[in-house]
Amino acid sequence: MHVLFREGVAGSRQKERAGKLLDFAWRELLDGGNVLARLQHDEPISPVPLEVYATFHELGHRHPGLESALEVCRRTTTWTALEMMPNRRLGVLNAERKLGLPPSSDFDQAVARTWLGQLPEPWTVQLHIAYDLTHTVFHLTNWGEAPERIPPAIADYLTRYLPAWMEDWADLEHWDLLGELLVVDACLPLPTLDAELWERYAAAQSATGAMPIQRRMPQGDAARVFDLVHHPTLVAAFASAMATSRALSAVG
Image 1 (spheres, rainbow, N blue to C red):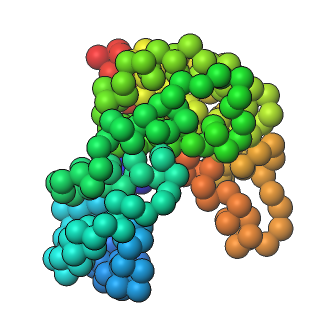
Image 2 (cartoon, rainbow, N blue to C red):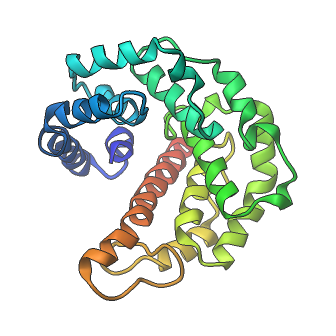
Image 3 (cartoon, rainbow, N blue to C red):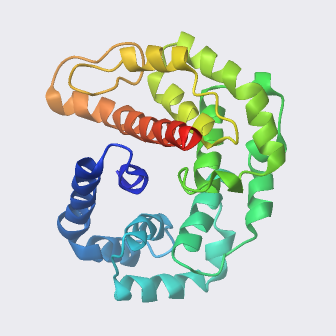
């Protein structure tokens, strides 16, 4: 939703709606940040409150109590020693950057520790590795806001191999992962914006706008269906906004 608001490619009315929905989430779902403050109090070393707060901080929302508590935790050795996946470490560093905080570790070194940062054999990519590499790009670029932050060697690697990966996951009809890979494509210096792939991706979307994870829409209890499709549907909105934005930039 933040990407839709930021890119504004769906028009002023949709941008206004996205902004109102984000304000509602801060005010009602997060109780003005109090939910995040309680979570941080219960799990002081968890980076999740910081990462969620960073997005709303970008939109102008503030919670001084949470910021003070986070600063105390960030002074601990555990904050930098906490074991996590390399791309998750990038997420923490990106959140710190969005909040204007000093980085808790070196960003370039963190990139180098990721799977993508080591430019491995492209044929070794499988499901979980593919999700890892997409999130490395998301954190590098702040969810597509700054594509120029992708190091040239990584951009060249992705330019060479991403089209084959997208084709593979399209053939498997894994729409959730394909959507994330389409976002990565939109972040490259010269995105392919492959029309045929986009047509296949769009054809998988249901009449309600929901996107299945893989193959076709699940059936059954509405709550269960929502749980299964909410992520791929958000990814579809993310991918569409990014691709449209890049296409319009190219025309402009």
